[in-house]
Image (cartoon, rainbow, N blue to C red; front, top):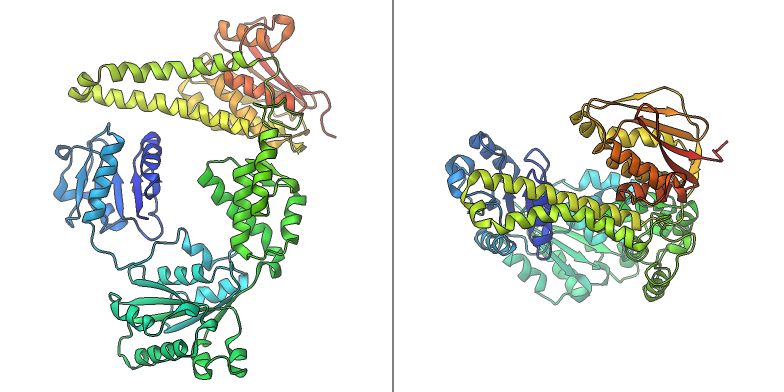
Length: 594
């Protein structure tokens, strides 16, 4: 699978290309040339240049450092680029100006992949292979040894490990760390045919790393062939082979019992590395689960996932017959099938045969098929499905109208550079708006029963407001805090942070420019925001949130989600008008912690 690196300032362009190309290739994205390239380089670089004025020669130098041999797809017309300055090494280049279509992108990427220089690598890259040289994928002791020998110019290395401990992955990581462009050959010692090893090495182009798995199961003839190959390499002034072997059993013990060639066992055991089974690394399980979960959440586009202490205890106590590989499979099953925010012991899907049961349990718990219990996805209190769908349609309609209008005038848009630029900016903004809304709804839908513990909700509100710093600055709104604290309340930290983020996003667009926003503690477990909004907005929010004022108004969707989660966590959201025309947004807990 080829690796495609997409560099563009637009989040929509990056995400669109990740989707369009992701079915055929590994896709990495970055906002600018200053961000690090994927480990192992890329096979095609897709680049959106910054607008003019710009220095194409300086960009060319940056490209030469980042991906010196990668074919280049520029998201520009050829007339907009000084090609001789930008691409000094004459790598293959294709052009595809924005706005582009999916077919054009795929076609040009395939063309560039066909035009790239032949690679000596004969096996696919292992994604994130370098992690296998570090804790927690290997023990601290193994990581220390690997750090010393991974890049050393040694003729042979031996890796001991059970199935699933990562012997092949560690071998590949050592190859990548030493010479990524050398030939990589992976063979099974127990299934090697006589002469196959020599033929493969002879056919390799230049320096080769040969990994022989399960060398302890190789026949006597194959052991002899390995020994002859090593002896031949010793006689060469510049050896062209590095050998890495994996074994499950101690080669010295096998040799002592006559089951392995003694001279070969001495040659192979110069610098052995032992990968302990996971059942002997119980204290490392929590760290490994954290890293694996973080990587999978990024790939699955999940939010933060935490583990209850009892769930970590259950993972730590399991014997892990398949070691790290089995742990990765268990975490993936759990995240894909459960979509949890907090993983409880019963959420863990250990066995493949439990997948069907887990899906049935998840389906039975789905609010689309049955009335959810108190621990299911939170319901929007006081709102029925029609209201939610109506608000969702309202939020999506405006950006859709923008896109539709430009699509109807596409001919004139493409003919005028200024209109084309405006088209690109507005449609990108519209798509980002829809994407943010849908991501918010997906995140909300994943919440289950609150994992309550003492939290400082005022600190969470401050954090959510700080994230809106730029938007507040555009409206010249200053945030003042009176210094008092509301104390701790029992609530789910992740759910309350989501609620305050939704609340603040909904607030910013309705604030009166050049007005202050004051945050203050109004008692234990009570936080208030004093602000100024447009009168119609204030009346609508007060009428919806506070039933005595009417209760018939429908809220903005962001406010509805915030109110649902606040109530779900034992609090209440209130809005009232003040005599001076200001608005007070109040979040309160009747029973604060402590």
